[in-house]
Each structure stands twice: as structure tokens, then as C-alpha cells.
Image 1 (spheres, protein in one colour):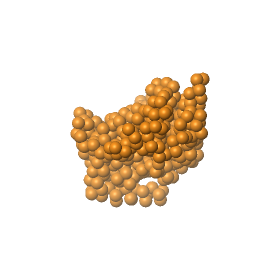
Image 2 (image 1 turned 90 degrees about the horizontal axis):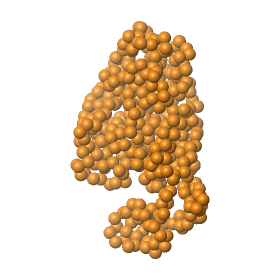
Image 3 (image 1 turned 120 degrees about the horizontal axis):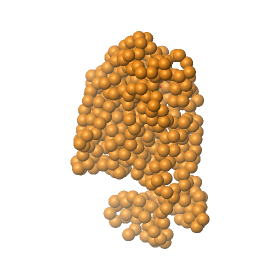
Length: 417
Ligand code: DPM
């Protein structure tokens, strides 16, 4: 067999090379053929890329990625994981590192911590800063420069359109996607319903404030910023807030479940797109890392989040618009409820739709395609296509009922605040 090698890579633990090739006979692209002896590589294929870089372990060390040599002289790539410096980001990255360690015991992992614009601007409400890639830009720059190989994010902080060259290579099983109430200790035992009139609730999320203002008109809402540690401190050590609203998932990861007094169901507050799911961002062309992290994908979470992200993307919404969702997969049916709100929650539009995500439904499409930034070769393509379409269809339904007017007004009012 002869063929054209498009890309060749070496994975930790591999004896040979993983080739992405195009055979000259059939012209069908093959991905990841493992060629064991090195000789076979050069004799069987017409090499069109500068493959010599990868030819011997010695030469591999000259490649673009960081490598280490073990006792037997075997050269392995070091997988560098980029993270923000906040405690939550560190916990999330360590969690993914543990998963990778279990799946690939021989892999060399390194964690590289960086601070981002979002971490530096602590005094301004997230929705006012407006920059969608607030927490992701520096980390993406490091990815681009090959300083790190993957970055762990909260999926809800990732824009629905990623910059060129990046993709979400893994979406892990979702924690609770719901929001939770954390009370000032003096209010212990109360709920949003029973808190006294005029109680001040801390949140900078337009989505949370809009829904809760409508549902609990006796409460007042005030911005609160900072990472989770800072917010809890602001709550407990001052008298400014009667309670704050945070994502249950973040609280759980921090080990603060005991502070959750109430988890808000969809009738009180629908969640943000992607909330509660971790995502691993990688270079879209780095097949090795993509393949490695793809084993972390959780199919049901992938499908739910593709639908949610497609919905948000079609509405042209970022992290600073009052848009909320609720999704569910049951018996291969994916249902999506989506809503948009005015800032005070008085105006809103909410609709629901569902679709079959049965993998038996053989509507295969190109395997390499991304769906709202997600690459998941190991999740049925037809289901991903259906999930994306569901999000777009639901957004179109809301748009036909005037969603854009509600969102445009909300954006203008928020900018003028
Ligand atoms: C985004 C929002 C918030 C974060 C907006 C929203 C909350 C901001 C605030 C897009 N990102 O939810 O409507 O309360 O002022 C964020 C948190 C997590 C990821 C913290 C939180 C952890 C939970 C997860 C901040 N991003 O929402 O309490 O992994 O989903």
C-alpha cells in the first residue's frame, strides 16, 4: 500500500507512528494507522510532509512539543495543561489531570497556571466587561504558541464560536447544572420565598437576576464580583447581602456543598448554556491530543451542550445576555427548553422542542466536523447534527416571536447601567 502522509505523530506509549494518510488507490482518508517498525513508514508511503522531524526519538525532541526521555531512552511527549490561577480553575484542572492519569498511566502531565484579564478585573460586573473571551484569551495564546497542549475550562465560559485553530476536544459528564442559594449565616433556615422584603441578593448574572426578579418580586438584586472565595467572604463578613446565587457545580467542586441552602429548579431559574460541564480546549490540528482527550467525552453531556450552544449562538448571545436553558435526554430523545428575558424579567419568551438522538438513525455526515466548537469523533455524528439543529430551530422559533428585540433592549440597558 502506498499513500500520502498528511500527518504523523507519536503518542506516549506508542511503539510506532500514528499516521493520518490518504491512500493513493482508494483516496479514502485514513486516520491514525499505527505503523510499527520505522522502516515500514518510509518504504510504504510517499512522504509529502516534513516527516523527518518525527523520524527518530532524537529528532522528535526537536519538534514543536515538549518531550522527556525516560530511563530506557524512550522519548515521550509531555502534556502541558494550562489553567487559570483561581482555586476553582485549579481544582477543575486537577480533576481532569487525574482522569487522564487513570486512562494513560504513562503520560507525563504538567500544569501551567496563568492569570487572565477576567481574574485581574475583579471590581466590574462580568456582564459589563462584555469581552466574551475574558477568561480564555491568554490561555489560547499559550495553546497557540505550543506552551500548553490543553486547557480546562468551565464550558459556560467558552464562547459559542472559538477562534480559528481551536476546538473543544472533550466535554466531561455534567455536574448539577442548576443554580444554588447560599445564605448569609444569619438567615439560616430561610429560602428566597421566606427572606424578608427588600433582602439584597448578590449576583452579577443578568440571567439569574432577570428570572429571580420576576419570580421573587420582594427581593432586591445587586452585583457581586470576584472568584468564589471572594464572594463567600463578601457574603459572610459583611452585611451587604442576605444571600448570593452561585452555580451548584462550582460550590460542589470547591467542597462547599454544605453552604447550599436551596437548589433552584427550572421553575425558579433555568441555567446558563453549558453550566456544570467541564470542557477541554485543544489545538484543532493536534490529532494526538484530540484523540487522547476524546476519551473524556460524555455523550449525553456533549449532545445537551451542543444543543444549548447552538441555541445561544443563533441568538448571537455571549456570557452577558439574559438567556437560559434546560435540557434533558430520555429514551434517545433530547429536549431543550430555552428562554430570553428583559433585564427585569417582565418581558420573556420561552419555548421547548425535542429531537431524536438515536444513534441508529444513520444520517452520517463528515466525521471531522465541529459542532458549535466541539469535536467529538466518538459520539454519533447524526446525533450531534440533530442536537445542533434542535438548538438552531428553537432559537429561530424565539426569534420569530421577537427574541432579538428583547435581547437588544437588554444589552442597551445593561451597557447604560
Ligand atoms: C458565566 C456567568 C457566570 C460565570 C453568567 C451566568 C456567573 C457570573 C456571576 C457565563 N460565567 O451564569 O449567567 O454570577 O456574576 C462561572 C462560574 C462557574 C463557571 C461560577 C458561577 C462554575 C460552574 C460551572 C462564572 N463560570 O456561575 O457561580 O462550571 O458551570
